[in-house]
Structure formats: C-alpha cells, structure tokens
Image 1 (cartoon, rainbow, N blue to C red):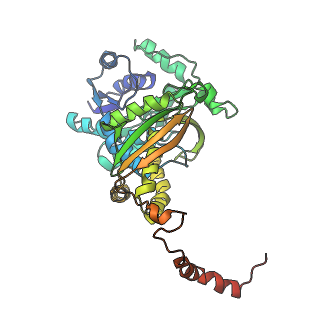
Image 2: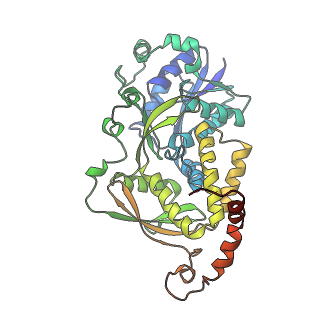
Image 3: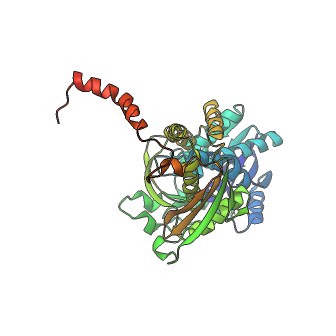
Length: 404
C-alpha cells in the first residue's frame, strides 16, 4: 500500500480527508504540527486519528522554531504584505511542510497531503515548499481533485460522511466565517466576511485581543530589548523567542493592539477579505523600528525598506526555500548586526507610543543634531553641499524653463 503523511488538525476537513485517503488505499501517518494553535485535548486528537484508521499519529511542538527561525527573520525585514499584513499564516506553512516531509522520510512515505483549498494561498505555500525540499515526494491536495469535490461539494456532505464513518467531529452546516490560529496571530475569512459591507471587527469574535474601546483606561509600558535585530528580552527579563511572543500577545491583547481588516490580493489572482489580529508581533514591529532609528545607517535602512515589500511578497506567495530568499536572509542578518538596544513603549487603547529608546550602538549624536548654538556641525558647510546638489537643477532650469 502507498503511504502518505497528512498535515492533520483533527477538525472536519482533515478528518474527512483522512477517511478519504484511507478509501483510496493509502496508509496514512497523521502529523499535528503545534504552531501555537489552541487545543483543549491533544490526546483526543491523536485518539481520533487512530480511531478513523491512521497508521500512526503524533504531535510535534515547533513553537520555538517558528518564532526563532521563521517569524523573527521576517520581523528583521519589517516585512508587511501590501503594507499591512504581518504574514502570520504565511510564515508558518513552510515549517509545517518541512515537518511533514521529515516524517515522510522517516516513515518511507511517498506523499504528503494537506487540506488547503484550490482557491487559497496555503496550497501554494505547501506545494512550493515541498517542491524545493523534496521534489520526489508527491503532494496530495484533495480540494484540487474533481473527484473529491464531487464527493464533498459542501459541509453538509462532509458532516454526513463523518456520521456514516462514525468519525467524531464538532461541526455544523452554519459557518459564519473560518479562522486559523497560531502563536503569531489569528486570521478570519470567508462566510459572512465575504460581504464587504459588514464590519469585520464587529462580526469577528476576536480570540487574542479586546476591543480598543474596552481596553484599560490606564496606559501600560513595556520594555523590549534587541540584540543584532533579534528580540531577546521583555521588561528586562531574557526570554526564549516563543516566550517573548507569547508574553507580548498577552500584554498587547489586553490593550487591543494589532487588529486589521483588509482586502488583499491572493497569489492565485483574486481579491479576498481577511481580518487579522497579531498583538505581540505588532508590538515587535514597532519596537524594532524605534531601535533601528538609532542604529541603522540611513542608506542601508532605505535599501532595506525598498526590498521589504518584495520579501513580504515572497513569504506570502510561498517562495521561502529559494536561492533568492536565502540571499536576502543573508543580507538582513548583516544589515541588522548593529541593531542592539532597548525601547520602552506605551500601550493605550489600540495605540503604541514610543516612550524612550537607548542603544550602545546609537548613531544619534546630540552635538551634531542640536538646534541650539554651538555644537560640532558647521552650517557653512551646507553652502557647498547644496551648490553641488543643485547643479543639475540649475542646468535643467536654464535649458528647460518651467512655468510657475
């Protein structure tokens, strides 16, 4: 019998896919990749997989790896897809794929399977990561198969399948929207959110954040430390990457930090509406910016800022394991080598305000920047500087006079 590894969540879709793969003659190894999603009873998930007929089922905790090796490198770029989305789901998919492929190698499986649809971005991230890491392993995407879609045109057919196979699932035909959660964020899409006249923030029951107008009346300060562009401490305490994100999620969540509602351009070509909350990562993006303002050279920062949208696009599309992305990661590690320091932020009703910033590598020189008399900057030097800078303007102005 052929065997495959299924990226398994224990929910309706992957439970149905597990049953369907067994019908197709596969031996299935279920892998629940813990990226920080909530789960009341993990043993129950494994038991259900075995009950359905999985050859094996296991859980692998990758929360530290996700934050350290995936989220923080993207943070170093301060990369946001279409200027707003912090890429929480996009960042996790290459890691989930890698773990599925590692298990496939261990078990001698010739395929991996996932529950991403043929309309979304996740199918691209799974497929492209698998193609780069293990091009000899087949990727089974049931939602892209006509036979599967005919068998399960909607949730009612999936629920009926589970009832017939005695597969325990908690699902109903009604589906106001879908959500995907990890330790970096929660995303909400589909269902009622496809109607753009409906307020996303009023429709969604947010899981990480309170509404800003319900946040405390008293502001809270938080101090974050960085070493070479990497977060290393919160309020003076050295923490692991996941612990930093987790603690900032709690702090930012109670102040309503990090909610967005956007219409984005999917890789497959359509526009879709997504609502997101990412309190911890939103705080880290702002904190890093304030330390960079002290420590990063102007031209280097501007170059990074020009490249950051392209990095965000690569992550969003799924081109993580590529030569280009490797080169860009090498660049940002070098660019951030002096970004060390601390920033104190004030959080208040969805807002992040900078309170103070310090760095042993600060390029800020008050003796040069001061607007008071004296100092080490000679204003007379600006005369020659502007004569040189203005030369092309003067020549063009004589040759092609402008009306004003």
